[in-house]
Amino acid sequence: CSRLKDGMRMRAPEYATPEIYQIMLDCWHKDPKERPRFVELVEKLGDLLQANVQQDGKDYIPLNAILTGNSAFTYSTPAFSEDFFQEDISAPKFNSGSSDNVRYVNA
Image 1 (cartoon, rainbow, N blue to C red):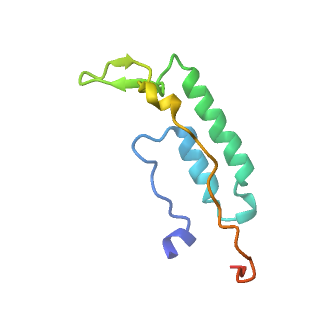
Image 2 (image 1 turned 60 degrees about the vertical axis):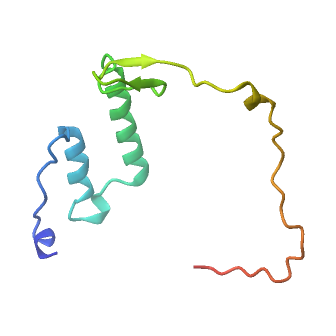
Image 3 (image 1 turned 90 degrees about the vertical axis):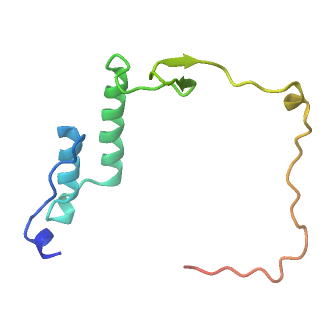
């Protein structure tokens, strides 16, 4: 803990980009008021993710892709049985008993 107070920070993780490491350093700023707020972090990280996806698909794996042994992608759609769409889906059943014994606790 004293090392943190003295300004010691871990080095950048092996695969962290300079932008990610800068965000880490910003979060460790000695003055808490100078640290980024959550909203700012969401915006910065969202921008980085968006930029990364736009770089010719770099590091982007489509959700419907299946990895094969040679790391090539095979695209497929999920297979459903005919009965899947025929199943009766009903609303969950809730206990409609009295709520006299319900207690709420603020934690």
